[in-house]
Image (cartoon, rainbow, N blue to C red; front, side, top):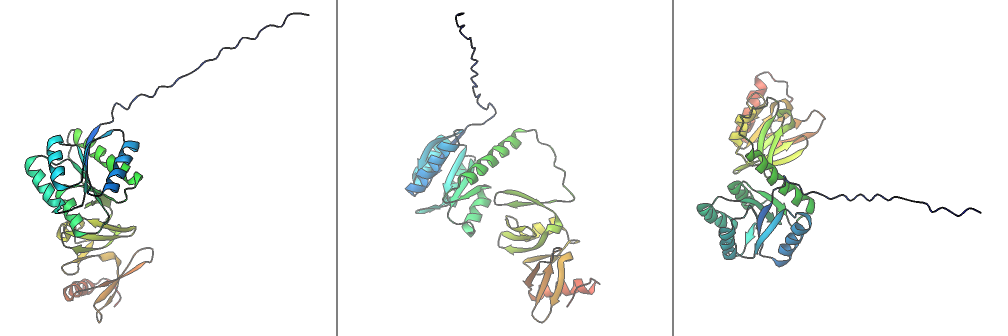
Length: 276
C-alpha cells in the first residue's frame, strides 16, 4: 500500500493598512458650556466621532472662556448661547476687538429666540440644538470644512443664476426659485419665508429680499409683507385679507394691513384675474 502523500497548502494573508486622509484638516476647538452634563456629552461625541478635532480646553464660565480663547486661539468655538452673568454677544464683541473670530457653533435649547438670531448674525455662525445630535454635529463640522475649502481656492466671480435666488439662512445659503416662494413676512432684522416645501428663517431684511426677488414676481403688501403675484387667488376687502393658492392647490390666508390691501387692490385693477 503506497504511503500517503502530505498535501501542501499555501495561505496568502492580505493585510490592508488604512492610510490616513492626508487632505483632512485638523482643528483645535474650545467648548464653552456652563452645564456639566451637556459639556461632557459634547466632549465625548467629538472624541468618539471626530478625531480630527482636538479639544484644547473646555470652560464653564465667561472669564475662563475669554482667557482660554485668547490664549489658544482655536479654530472652532462651541459656545453655549446662554452664559450665566454675561451674554454671548458680550464675549464675542470682546473677542472681536482682540482677534479674528474662529468658526463658531452655538449650542442652544431653543431655535427661535431673537437673541440667538442676533448672535448668529454677529458671528456668521452655525447652531446646534441641545442635546446635540451626532448627525447634526457632523453636518455642522462638514460645513466648516467646506467653508475652509472654498476660502482656500482662488477667488472667482460668481455669476448670478436667473433661475435661483440666494438667501442667507441660519445654516448657510438657500438657493430657491421665485416660483417656490409663496410669501415673505418681515420680523425685525430677519424674515420668515414660506416656501412650497416648508419655511425658512432668512437673515436679511425684507427690503433686501424684495430687491433680489424683483417687483415683476412679487408685490409689496404693506411694510412687512411680500406676496407672490402669481399665487394671489382671492381678496376679501371686507375682512382685509387675501388667499394665496399654490400650483398644487394649497391655500394660505393672509391678513393685510390697510396699506397692504391698497397695494393688492391696485394690482387687481391693473387687469389681473383675481377673485374678490
